[in-house]
Length: 108
Image (cartoon, rainbow, N blue to C red; front, side, top):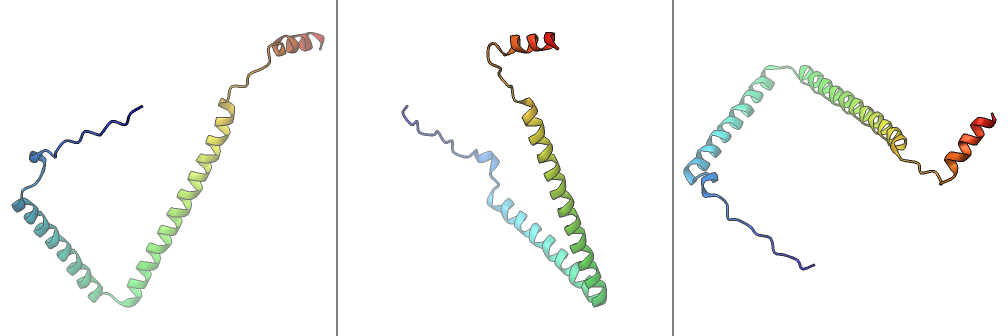
């Protein structure tokens, strides 16, 4: 089978922002990040070191608990999926196996 070249379309000019809009987006985004950093510098300047350490410790503990719980949940779901997959496999019996099973049931 011959490899067909991919057809690529040029980007739609209506979906591309103009130069002025891109500059405006960069300026607004930069101002937002500058305000965010300034506010955190202001907050950290007003708080004691022990409060910052407590907050960072609390965040680290929260992340550890969330990651551990998620990993356990994923492992549980994977084990359930493995067990379920084994039940969904179709076991094909040899041609005479159904008759043999019927004879065994009658004999019992």
